[in-house]
Every structure is written in structure tokens, then in C-alpha cells.
Length: 311
Ligand code: ASP
Image 1: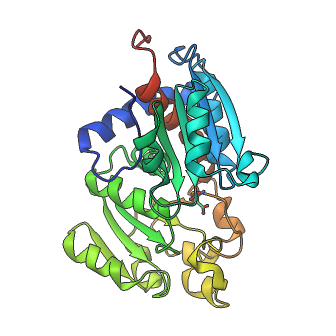
Image 2: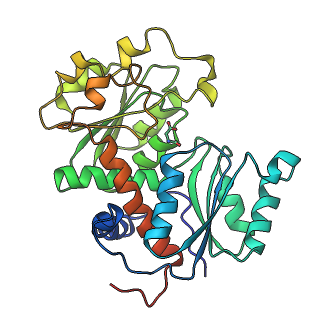
């Protein structure tokens, strides 16, 4: 039976840990420094991207290729979506091509679940609206685990446009399942009251609107982009950087061991200053990208890998 990856909500600690362990083993292959097993040999993976993507799309393609599989790629632009074909009809037709898996990004929250209920092949969510981005959550966990040797007890702040971020949702689910404490930080417009209710139900999640007050206690600071393409379409407040940007001056107040993360794309000078994004001691931003390939290898292998794979 096809094994989907639709969300991290509900995945237990053992499952998350086994994906992270497998991904950690793939890091040298993801960098092109070691051979990976051909566990996707003969497998066809459709990469369906109905929203823009750089890292996620290329890393799913790289992961497929590293494991010996083949990609068929389709974007919203240039496909029959522009002739009015529905999202579901497109997926049913791609499924009928005989693919083994489809990697799907769309602006519809729950879009990947809809396809999983209707197609025969495995469905992997590469970001559905503002709901989840499970492979991003996994690569964030892998990056934190590599930096600290553990996730349990690590203090993580997720800063910015929490309301519209699928990255934040996947990180909250996975990091808390693995025992990290998560502080959500943002202006009231981007961190609405519904998150206070989530925090009230969960001992490991808390919220604040005051970034400056928590800087000295952090192990990880994860900056988010303001999602202008979603409800934050009103624009970025003129004083956003002043209150929520990881500026040079703010970075000086972080503990020496604190790492800086960002899922990309980075709006330099808005959520992160140039010198902070490029600080090789703290910034994990490019490391996260490499980990994205390794994590996607682990996920694809779990979903549609050959059972006779080399261990
Ligand atoms: N690349 C991430 C996403 O697709 C984050 C972002 O776009 O800001 O959700």
C-alpha cells in the first residue's frame, strides 16, 4: 500500500526519530560525497508544484536522482491548469501515467490529503497552503539535532509571520514531539489569539510579542518570511525590522552557542540582516538546504523505496 507523508502532526517520536536517523545517514550522499543505495531504481516520482519553489522542488528532484529514481516535473504555469483543469483532475491524470509517487505543493490547505484520498500512488506533501510543510519540519529537526546532539530540552524561538506559516506549524508539531520547547514570537497581527489557545493546551509551547526580552535564553532562533502571497498581503509594516528583524544588534544579544535558521527565501534586511545570514559560525541556512535533500531521500525511500534496498 502507498505510504503517504501528509503532515507531521500525529507522527510519533519513534517514527520521527527513524526518519531523522535515516536522513542523517544520507547527508554525505546528499552532498555528493558518497554513493546512496539505488532504492528508487525504476521508480517514477512526479514533482507537481502549483506554487513557486526553489529549494523544495530542486531538493526533491535531487533526492530522487541520488536514490536512482526518475522525476517527471510539472508546474502550475505551463500545465493544463492554465486551461482550467482542476487540481484533482491534474493529479488523477498524473496518477494514470503510472507514477509511483507524487510530490505536491499547492496553495490549498489540505490539498495533499485530498489527492491522497483519490490516487493510487504515494502522496508527499511539499507544502499545502498555510497548513504544513512536513519535510521542512524534518530538515529543521535534523539541523537542530546535528547542532546540539539532541532535540529534547532545546529552546527554540520561531519568529515572524506565524499565522500564515506552514513551516511554523510543521516545526511546532515535530519539535514538541521530540521534546524541544518552542516560543512563538511575532506582532499580534501575525500571531493571533488562536495561538495563545494552542500554547495554553501545550506545556512546551509559549507565545510572546517581545523578541528582545527572550534573546539571551535561546538555543535556536528560526526566522520566518512574511507571507505576502497569503493573508499578510497588506504588506510588511514599516517598523517590522525594528521590532522583529534579526538585526546585527539583536544577534549580539544571543548566547554564543545560539544558531540562526531560516527556511528561505530570505528577505535580507527585513527578517534577517546580511551579516547575520552570512555569519558562518551561527547561520545554518545553507546547511538546512543540504539537510533538505537528505530528509527527502529518507521520506521517498520510506514511501516508495524498493524493499530489497541496501542498508
Ligand atoms: N519556502 C517555505 C515555504 O514554502 C517558506 C517560505 O516560502 O517563506 O513555506
